[in-house]
Length: 403
Image: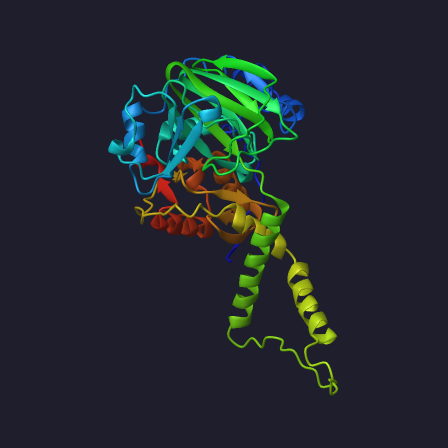
């Protein structure tokens, strides 16, 4: 992990983040601050014409073509029959066009995850939600549905904004403390779904749902297309497991350093035992002391957590990029995740110490996802060298080279 330091901090307002206290059309006239206080993780919100004049980020044909890609996470969900005879089928991509049902056949859906990794228009849609921490963002999923198509009544463990971009979809929602999942199905369908509210969304309308709200969406009056902006809610067990794995890796790296002498268990006071199967209490204390030492290392837990939260999904890969020329800005690759805390910068699973002006400019890049040429001209040699390396890795790109 490399240290970064520089000149005293300089305040820089970030135009890339929406004004937190001003009414927003996206949120039905609520400010981002009001929305987070009144609805986030609390209550659903329906906003008519949250994105007036919205256009689908891609056509149906382009979506089907994208779903054919090896690097794209896609699914085909098909419902057969209704009522007691209803059944569901799930196929995971890549989805060749010949595998898809005829367009006139009802009750099927194609879903593509991570659309922001492939389309600037999807990235622009995500940018409107940058009043929510990047560390919570999962991705933007798009679903195309034939007449009656959907994925059945279900609930998610994350916050989601459902944006209608083409056609109409009927949403039914309800709180389901006693939800029962139908057994032996490839998709998690609630068998005792009881909706409390129902709406039909048209292009530009948006529905926000907190975690745990059961919902069911079907295309009505023909085909439709819906974008879903999801924000993950990692479990405490997941965070503990992943941070401990990274802390263990850090311990191995420390032990491997040249000249390091790792602590080795010694028990010169061990007496002869008639219970050879019993684990010695001293060995337990030795292991506990080692774990405590790792957890008490200043910044170790924060560093491990930041590395995990910024790590790309397993399906993401980067190609070598272009050199960073002089006199231009930089922009993050759509697949890159750049986060920070009080002492670190985290990029795609790696960590750096950062302080002073170097920390400020990299935090600006994390918040705005780009630096213009003026900002780049003022960065230190250390930051420029880091950005040049990130360009070589394909994590950032010269701003002038992107249309």
